[in-house]
Image (cartoon, rainbow, N blue to C red; front, side, top):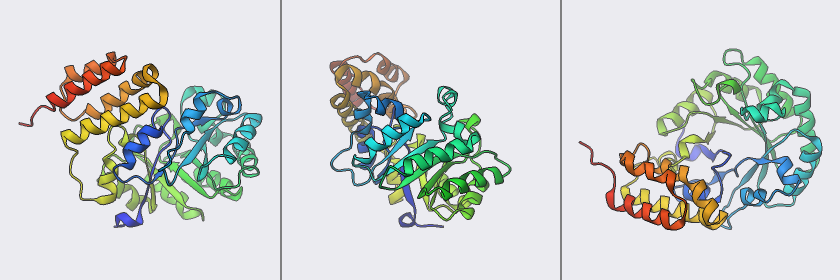
Length: 317
């Protein structure tokens, strides 16, 4: 079994989640390697103001990669040139997003069925950026490793420096078992580092993923939502559940930073799901949790926060 020092844990580029406040919450508990949320090449190329918020990096962040999504060559070129001038440790190109509107644009996981276009995009980005280029993708079959191996080998031949592979087919989104054998086969047939992604919600999950794939780099995604303490569990391995005080204090700081980043109205509304994620599954009353969806101002949030702090979780029987 690999020791914690041998495993590199990476926070996934989750759209609408892994912004600067989210990453800061995770970094409090041991996270080092992280991605921005997914950035759309078209939005970046055409000056969408949200791009600056997605790409905002904290001065204290020692490692940060950016994940780029796109399929239109002109937009990809412009976006790559912009990112090449910015302070990121690597550019990661998305070939795994399974969302319908992304697939309809022939982006994300659609590239896996358009191998020639996939290679053209990689070459285009590779010719522009001066730093490392990596790819995040999925598996093509959960029983036959050959199609996925061939696809990933073609990406490696184009000069990418690393690959993250989610062990589920695109049509399965995040449900069903992770295909450990397919990830292992890809790792064994590539020379570049391979990061395994899929299903990490606790240390036991991470140990299984590492053991069955042989990967020394693991990506954490949904398991970190409302649970930045997962990195304390994974990295320190002397884990104790977060206390009530840790939960309300971390949630409070997270939401306040979202208000600072996005402005009060937008920040509070975006933070509703974040507030819920901290409370769900931790014995906080349903009635209290239901109040989060009605919060519209900072004053509302402070009142909600005070109620969470004072009431606490229902005692275990």
